[in-house]
Length: 451
Image (cartoon, rainbow, N blue to C red; front, side, top):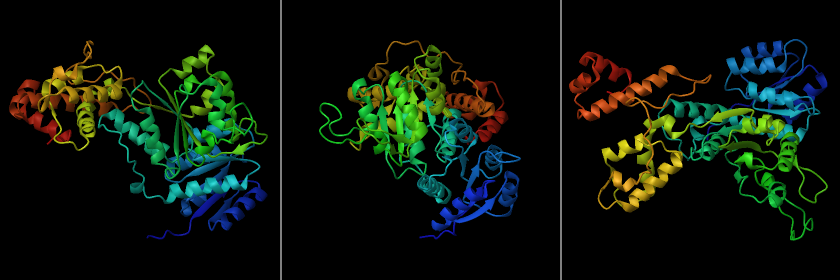
């Protein structure tokens, strides 16, 4: 087993007493500590030696801790950095998380909370990336899916709340599980909650637990889902379905990092990462007054949008192959999908997204009598086909991470593939079909990695 050199933390705070307390706590954990009294001094030290973690105060003379977080994100992106904030200043904590901080700890510094934070950060810093691969798979080579995977790799380093948006059936829970699996909490529990499936009168007990005798039928103490997820991740699916009274209690639990069981007199500290999702437009619900704006800001520190299947049509063949193998479950040869069937699937708009694709293929395997799935076996609903140019996905909605060149390459690759299929892989005939020279065809195939 490979031994790592001793870990070292950079502690940045202009108050000597707090700086010394944190350094002493770290040294008792067998972690080296180097102090700095300003962001400027911290930047000098970062350029002189390697650190495994940085703990920085928010408010300091000169440049702020937030400036230091942004500096570290630009120059040392693999260095976890946590913010020390004034007690109750959640706005500052949210700011830090958005800037790229791994986590935050409020003043006065709770040493138990600090130790947990440091342990998690060291796990991130030391963990080999090859050992952080999820057993679950986010399939697809489209630009949209490559962007999702890259974003997840960054989010896994953080404890910031993530709001996962997207249509029903796009795989929002799979995205949440992947974030959990690739992060430092992977060895702890991932606890999913469908907020729309819990009766309103049982919600508080389910979330926070209850004390024996606190209400009729409470015959024993019960641990809530927050406690069950302690040290791990709590996934709030369909968070838009939470009633107003639970929104208030959830907000307090997130801010205070503690819950009070029904009938209990004391709050219980909990250390959970919050991931949430819904297929509804949460910002519209905030405008309508049915979802609390302050809770929206707490769970929406980082937004991750999962694209619909219509937005990544080129991934359909890969998804089909994966789903059919999974449905077969080792029970003999996997039936092939005829070209006509694949064409029908690519043209189908999939209002139910990947979940609908799985259902369609499961039904088709049941109905298929030969070795090949036909369009009749698919029994696709009578929808208008997706209106696109040949081989082109729906026009995307560009955002700040949009990669135009990659998007255009995806379209070009799809068109080239179809031309080659039509001509039985005859490149000369495919070039004529596309209206380009054979030399241009060869150049494009090489550029797109298709040779």
